[in-house]
Length: 82
Picture 1 (cartoon, rainbow, N blue to C red):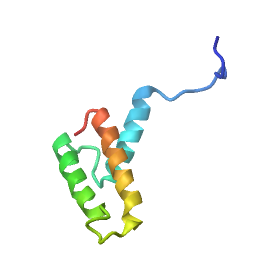
Picture 2: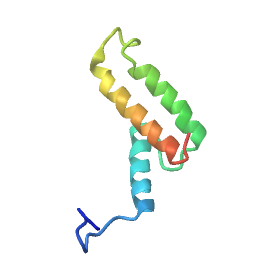
Picture 3: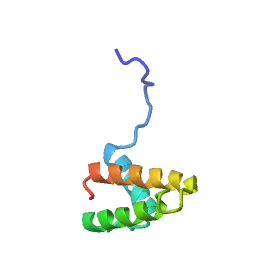
Picture 4: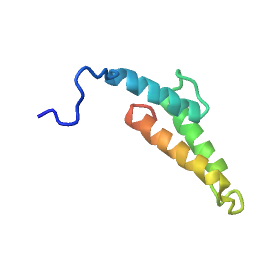
């Protein structure tokens, strides 16, 4: 057993990882750490509208941002926000 695991490898605590990734997600949505699930949801909808290629006359340069926003939101949702 234990294949692929290095002994003595320091693994950040799961809670710490969640907090870090959650902060990053909130940051991407332009929110601070104290944001409520409701704020997260509202902000997400605003950003999706702004970044959607259909809204920007088919401009796909915002598409990458849109994907980022969606990924962040999905993560935050699974972490208990939104």
